[in-house]
Amino acid sequence: EAGVAQSPRYKIIEKRQSVAFWCNPISGHATLYWYQQILGQGPKLLIQFQNNGVVDDSQLPKDRFSAERLKGVDSTLKIQPAKLEDSAVYLCASSRQRRHVRNEQFFGPGTRLTVL
Amino acid sequence: EDQVTQSPEALRLQEGESSSLNCSYTVSGLRGLFWYRQDPGKGPEFLFTLYSAGEEKEKERLKATLTKKESFLHITAPKPEDSATYLCAVLSNATSYGKLTFGQGTILTVHP
Image (cartoon, rainbow over all chains, first blue to last red; front, side, top):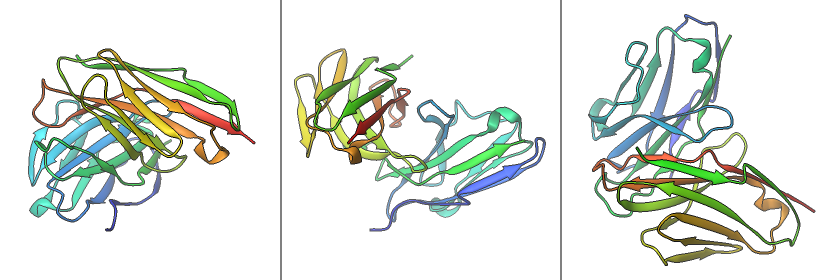
Protein backbone atom coordinates (compact mmCIF):
# COMPACT_ATOMS: atom_id res chain seq x y z
CA GLU A 1 0.00 0.00 0.00
CA ALA A 2 1.46 3.34 -1.04
CA GLY A 3 1.91 5.92 1.70
CA VAL A 4 1.00 9.59 1.84
CA ALA A 5 2.79 11.53 -0.88
CA GLN A 6 3.84 15.17 -0.59
CA SER A 7 5.62 17.61 -2.84
CA PRO A 8 7.83 19.48 -2.97
CA ARG A 9 10.10 18.15 -0.24
CA TYR A 10 11.91 21.46 0.21
CA LYS A 11 11.05 25.05 -0.63
CA ILE A 12 12.92 28.28 -0.02
CA ILE A 13 11.14 31.60 -0.64
CA GLU A 14 11.44 35.27 0.26
CA LYS A 15 8.97 36.78 2.72
CA ARG A 16 5.80 38.11 1.10
CA GLN A 17 6.05 35.52 -1.68
CA SER A 18 3.48 32.78 -2.21
CA VAL A 19 3.94 29.02 -1.96
CA ALA A 20 1.79 25.94 -2.42
CA PHE A 21 2.16 22.39 -1.13
CA TRP A 22 0.52 19.28 -2.54
CA CYS A 23 -0.63 16.10 -0.79
CA ASN A 24 -1.97 12.79 -2.08
CA PRO A 25 -3.37 10.65 0.79
CA ILE A 26 -3.49 6.89 1.09
CA SER A 27 -6.07 5.45 -1.26
CA GLY A 28 -9.48 5.12 0.38
CA HIS A 29 -8.69 7.41 3.31
CA ALA A 30 -11.56 9.83 3.76
CA THR A 31 -9.92 12.14 6.28
CA LEU A 32 -6.98 14.39 5.43
CA TYR A 33 -5.01 16.62 7.80
CA TRP A 34 -2.46 19.40 7.37
CA TYR A 35 -0.06 20.01 10.25
CA GLN A 36 2.61 22.62 10.87
CA GLN A 37 5.71 21.44 12.75
CA ILE A 38 8.09 24.15 13.93
CA LEU A 39 11.60 23.00 14.81
CA GLY A 40 11.70 21.45 18.28
CA GLN A 41 7.91 21.23 18.60
CA GLY A 42 5.25 18.64 17.97
CA PRO A 43 2.95 18.91 14.96
CA LYS A 44 0.07 21.40 15.24
CA LEU A 45 -3.14 20.80 13.28
CA LEU A 46 -3.93 23.51 10.75
CA ILE A 47 -6.91 22.06 8.92
CA GLN A 48 -8.83 18.80 8.66
CA PHE A 49 -10.97 17.58 5.75
CA GLN A 50 -13.59 14.86 5.76
CA ASN A 51 -13.86 13.88 2.08
CA ASN A 52 -13.85 17.33 0.43
CA GLY A 53 -15.44 19.26 3.32
CA VAL A 54 -13.62 21.17 6.08
CA VAL A 55 -14.41 19.89 9.59
CA ASP A 56 -11.81 21.87 11.59
CA ASP A 57 -9.81 24.92 10.55
CA SER A 58 -9.78 26.66 13.92
CA GLN A 59 -5.97 26.98 13.99
CA LEU A 60 -5.51 28.00 10.35
CA PRO A 61 -4.34 31.64 9.92
CA LYS A 62 -7.02 32.39 7.39
CA ASP A 63 -5.66 35.80 6.44
CA ARG A 64 -2.73 34.11 4.71
CA PHE A 65 -3.31 30.34 4.62
CA SER A 66 -5.84 28.51 2.47
CA ALA A 67 -6.44 24.88 1.65
CA GLU A 68 -8.67 22.85 -0.60
CA ARG A 69 -9.34 19.22 -1.28
CA LEU A 70 -10.81 18.71 -4.71
CA LYS A 71 -12.92 15.60 -5.34
CA GLY A 72 -12.12 14.33 -1.85
CA VAL A 73 -8.66 13.05 -2.80
CA ASP A 74 -5.64 15.34 -3.35
CA SER A 75 -5.20 18.50 -1.32
CA THR A 76 -3.30 21.76 -1.70
CA LEU A 77 -2.19 24.10 1.09
CA LYS A 78 -1.27 27.65 0.11
CA ILE A 79 0.46 30.48 1.95
CA GLN A 80 0.07 34.00 0.57
CA PRO A 81 1.97 36.09 1.56
CA ALA A 82 4.55 34.17 3.58
CA LYS A 83 6.10 35.51 6.78
CA LEU A 84 9.37 34.57 8.45
CA GLU A 85 7.48 32.71 11.20
CA ASP A 86 5.96 30.37 8.61
CA SER A 87 9.30 28.57 8.34
CA ALA A 88 8.45 25.02 9.39
CA VAL A 89 7.77 21.52 8.11
CA TYR A 90 4.28 21.09 6.69
CA LEU A 91 3.01 17.58 7.21
CA CYS A 92 0.06 15.94 5.52
CA ALA A 93 -1.64 12.94 7.13
CA SER A 94 -4.63 10.76 6.34
CA SER A 95 -6.86 8.30 8.16
CA ARG A 96 -9.69 6.00 7.17
CA GLN A 97 -12.56 7.99 8.69
CA ARG A 98 -12.97 10.56 11.40
CA ARG A 99 -15.25 8.57 13.69
CA HIS A 100 -13.39 5.30 13.44
CA VAL A 101 -12.21 4.16 16.85
CA ARG A 102 -8.79 3.19 15.56
CA ASN A 103 -8.06 6.63 14.20
CA GLU A 104 -4.44 6.02 13.30
CA GLN A 105 -3.14 8.85 11.20
CA PHE A 106 -0.48 8.09 8.62
CA PHE A 107 1.93 10.89 7.78
CA GLY A 108 3.74 11.89 4.64
CA PRO A 109 7.42 12.93 4.60
CA GLY A 110 6.60 16.62 4.89
CA THR A 111 7.64 19.77 3.05
CA ARG A 112 10.35 21.84 4.70
CA LEU A 113 9.66 25.54 4.08
CA THR A 114 12.28 28.20 4.69
CA VAL A 115 11.19 31.84 4.47
CA LEU A 116 14.05 34.33 4.11
CA GLU B 1 -7.88 22.83 26.31
CA ASP B 2 -6.05 19.55 25.84
CA GLN B 3 -2.39 19.59 26.89
CA VAL B 4 0.42 17.09 26.45
CA THR B 5 3.85 17.40 28.09
CA GLN B 6 6.70 15.01 27.37
CA SER B 7 9.80 14.45 29.46
CA PRO B 8 12.68 14.46 29.28
CA GLU B 9 13.20 16.73 26.28
CA ALA B 10 16.30 14.73 25.35
CA LEU B 11 17.68 11.40 26.53
CA ARG B 12 21.06 9.88 25.79
CA LEU B 13 21.55 6.17 26.45
CA GLN B 14 24.24 3.60 25.94
CA GLU B 15 23.31 0.61 23.84
CA GLY B 16 21.58 -1.90 26.11
CA GLU B 17 20.71 0.68 28.79
CA SER B 18 16.95 0.47 29.36
CA SER B 19 14.90 3.56 30.21
CA SER B 20 11.46 5.18 29.97
CA LEU B 21 9.95 8.23 28.33
CA ASN B 22 7.05 10.04 29.96
CA CYS B 23 3.94 11.64 28.47
CA SER B 24 1.68 13.57 30.86
CA TYR B 25 -1.67 14.74 29.60
CA THR B 26 -4.78 16.67 30.56
CA VAL B 27 -7.79 16.06 28.39
CA SER B 28 -11.55 16.31 28.70
CA GLY B 29 -12.23 12.61 28.25
CA LEU B 30 -9.54 10.48 26.64
CA ARG B 31 -10.55 8.67 23.49
CA GLY B 32 -7.04 7.48 22.70
CA LEU B 33 -3.35 8.11 23.33
CA PHE B 34 -0.94 7.68 20.43
CA TRP B 35 2.81 7.17 20.24
CA TYR B 36 4.73 8.05 17.09
CA ARG B 37 8.38 7.81 16.12
CA GLN B 38 9.91 10.53 13.93
CA ASP B 39 13.27 10.20 12.20
CA PRO B 40 15.11 13.32 10.95
CA GLY B 41 13.64 14.59 7.69
CA LYS B 42 10.66 12.23 7.83
CA GLY B 43 7.06 12.32 8.94
CA PRO B 44 5.92 10.68 12.19
CA GLU B 45 5.54 6.90 12.03
CA PHE B 46 2.69 5.32 13.99
CA LEU B 47 3.73 3.00 16.85
CA PHE B 48 0.84 2.41 19.29
CA THR B 49 -2.64 3.45 20.33
CA LEU B 50 -3.79 3.03 23.95
CA TYR B 51 -7.43 3.47 24.87
CA SER B 52 -7.88 2.92 28.61
CA ALA B 53 -5.93 3.02 31.85
CA GLY B 54 -4.06 -0.20 32.51
CA GLU B 55 -3.64 -1.04 28.85
CA GLU B 56 -0.20 -2.08 27.58
CA LYS B 57 1.16 -2.69 24.08
CA GLU B 58 4.51 -4.01 22.92
CA LYS B 59 6.50 -3.89 19.72
CA GLU B 60 10.03 -5.28 19.62
CA ARG B 61 12.01 -3.36 22.28
CA LEU B 62 9.20 -0.88 22.97
CA LYS B 63 6.38 -1.17 25.48
CA ALA B 64 3.74 1.51 26.02
CA THR B 65 1.61 1.77 29.16
CA LEU B 66 -1.24 4.08 30.14
CA THR B 67 -2.61 5.49 33.39
CA LYS B 68 -5.32 8.10 33.92
CA LYS B 69 -2.78 10.94 33.84
CA GLU B 70 0.23 9.72 31.89
CA SER B 71 1.74 7.22 29.53
CA PHE B 72 5.17 5.68 29.52
CA LEU B 73 7.19 4.36 26.63
CA HIS B 74 9.63 1.80 27.99
CA ILE B 75 12.67 0.96 25.88
CA THR B 76 14.39 -2.30 26.77
CA ALA B 77 17.99 -2.88 25.73
CA PRO B 78 17.94 -0.12 23.09
CA LYS B 79 20.03 -0.20 19.94
CA PRO B 80 21.46 2.75 17.97
CA GLU B 81 18.68 2.32 15.38
CA ASP B 82 16.15 3.25 18.09
CA SER B 83 17.55 6.80 18.00
CA ALA B 84 14.71 9.14 16.96
CA THR B 85 12.22 11.66 18.32
CA TYR B 86 9.28 10.01 20.07
CA LEU B 87 6.01 11.91 19.98
CA CYS B 88 2.95 11.42 22.15
CA ALA B 89 -0.52 12.67 21.16
CA VAL B 90 -4.01 12.55 22.64
CA LEU B 91 -7.45 12.36 21.08
CA SER B 92 -10.23 13.65 23.32
CA ASN B 93 -13.95 12.97 23.55
CA ALA B 94 -14.51 16.72 23.35
CA THR B 95 -14.11 16.59 19.60
CA SER B 96 -15.84 14.31 17.15
CA TYR B 97 -13.32 15.16 14.48
CA GLY B 98 -10.27 13.10 15.41
CA LYS B 99 -8.08 16.09 16.25
CA LEU B 100 -4.76 15.03 17.78
CA THR B 101 -2.90 17.23 20.27
CA PHE B 102 0.82 16.46 20.25
CA GLY B 103 3.52 16.90 22.86
CA GLN B 104 6.85 18.46 21.94
CA GLY B 105 8.61 15.12 21.72
CA THR B 106 11.57 13.40 23.38
CA ILE B 107 14.78 13.17 21.37
CA LEU B 108 16.35 9.78 22.06
CA THR B 109 19.99 9.10 21.19
CA VAL B 110 21.43 5.63 21.70
CA HIS B 111 25.21 5.38 21.54
CA PRO B 112 26.93 2.12 20.53
